[in-house]
Length: 82
Image 1 (cartoon, helix red, strand yellow):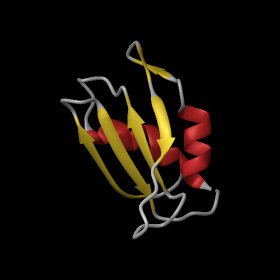
Image 2 (cartoon, rainbow, N blue to C red; image 1 turned 45 degrees about the vertical axis):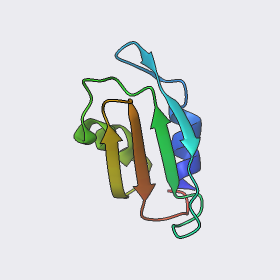
Image 3 (cartoon, rainbow, N blue to C red; image 1 turned 30 degrees about the horizontal axis):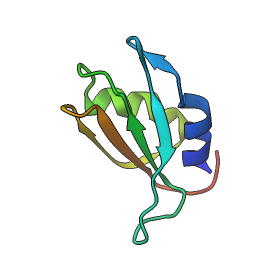
Image 4 (cartoon, rainbow, N blue to C red; image 1 turned 90 degrees about the vertical axis):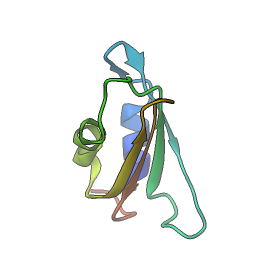
């Protein structure tokens, strides 16, 4: 699954001196296992930066970033792996 692969490969990866924390995010109305939450995102990062980091794992349906808290969310279009 795309989200699982992203979580496994990007969890604890250091970006601008910040080790990212990538976890599964499940919501009953969304595709299970297709969503991740990324914590400890650098304050200088943008949504485009987040998309660039995670698009290698699959097509992104939506993404958002709360810069104040350093938390980002990514929802992939598909559940299956690449």
